[in-house]
Image 1 (cartoon, one colour):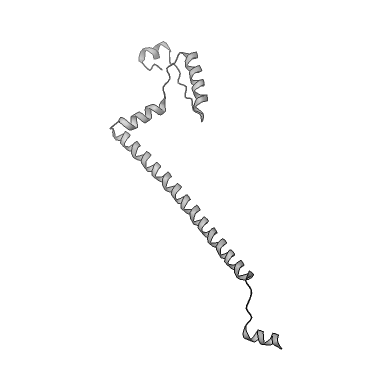
Image 2 (cartoon, rainbow, N blue to C red):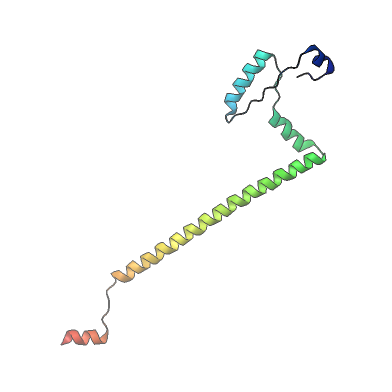
Length: 123
């Protein structure tokens, strides 16, 4: 896209096409076809952003890196919290199952008669 004054006067504005999608393999084919049809240059914004974050020393790049770090930390903490809750629920379930098993053992074991009950049976 040419933004010079001369291109504006001549009416040549150009176009910008942003291609976004989940599957990179599908996007790649679409981008190739569009670039070929319009004789365009392909710019990978993800790569530009990643390189800027990694190499730039500007305040904006530092803030962007900090934001990425904070978001990453929040994601890790959320996953850790979820795993801890799952572990607690699993441990509680195991404890309840063990209590049930202990109760079943007690119910299945023979009941000893008290001395009074044995005397009554002897009569």
